[in-house]
Image (cartoon, one colour):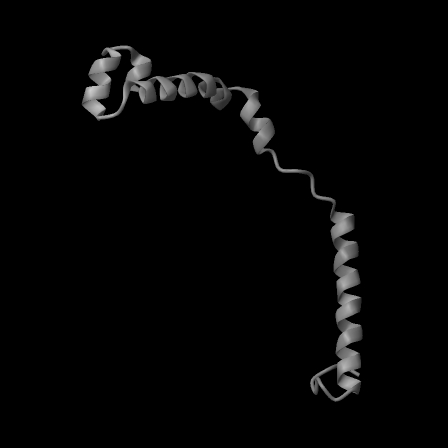
Length: 86
C-alpha cells in the first residue's frame, strides 16, 4: 500500500520493509492490476455459485436409497446384517 501511495521512493520503501526494490515493484503492479476487480463486476461473476439442479439431486437420493435398501435386505437374508429390514 505504501508503494501505491507514492509518498516515499522505491529505495526508501525497500530499506524500510527490508525487501528488494524489484519485489516492491512486482507487488505494486499486482495491486494495481487486481484492485479494479475488487470493486467491479469481474469478481462477482467468479464468486457466484453454480445453480443447483434439485431434480437431479432428488433422483440421485432415490437411487442411492433403493441401492441401500436392496443391499440391506440381501445382507439380512445372508445373515450378515442382523438388523436389516426384511
